[in-house]
Length: 126
Image (cartoon, rainbow, N blue to C red; front, top):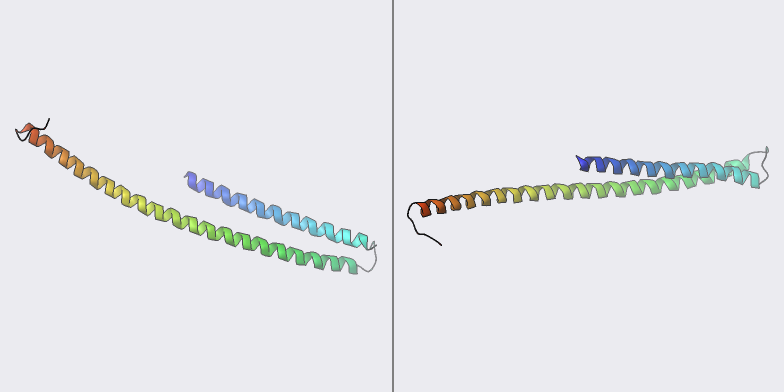
């Protein structure tokens, strides 16, 4: 149960990081557009400066989104590998548990066989 909770918390944390990065980028786009327009003296003129600034910032946003998508892809691949590793470990644990139960059964059988021999007058071991 705690594994699922940890995994959910990790997913939530990753989502929050992506949203924070995206929000920061969007705030940056707005700030850059306003700053570019003000630097060019565009108070109420033709608006071409704002359009160019917005176009540049849209390109920056697309690059940022591409980076975020790549990071999410890497995270998903890591998650798949970890999930596969956990499944493999679970299978190994099942096999080891079965072997342990089998060994325990054999030891109990030998132990009871030994007790029967010593109480029935069989060879006595000191």
